[in-house]
Image 1 (cartoon, rainbow, N blue to C red):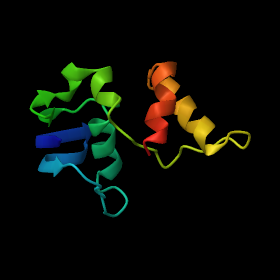
Image 2 (image 1 turned 30 degrees about the horizontal axis):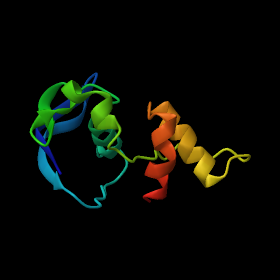
Image 3 (image 1 turned 30 degrees about the vertical axis):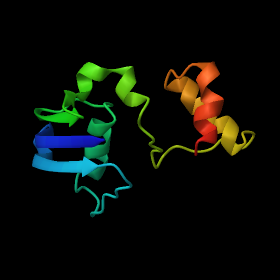
Image 4 (image 1 turned 135 degrees about the vertical axis):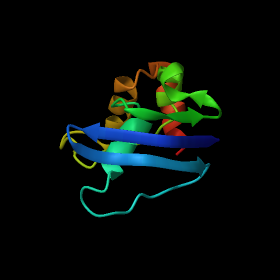
Length: 116
């Protein structure tokens, strides 16, 4: 698995959030560290195909992520900082709910969750 980010730029009005960012992420766990306003959330939102970029490309195993659609998003595991667990949900119920939101078929949810 490889995600290759090349010359990624994103602006919000006159504010540049990402300026010509290039990096490669191989399989594993990665962290983004930086002060407020450094572009961490913007990068994550582009990587999760939640917002559009102004310039650059993001490739997953040499395929542009925007062309992969739901197949790409099914591979991602991402919990935004603002996301809150509902008091009446167990952790498993919440993950099943999020799987439904991502469009994962009910038949595949249980086995995928147990793999974690």
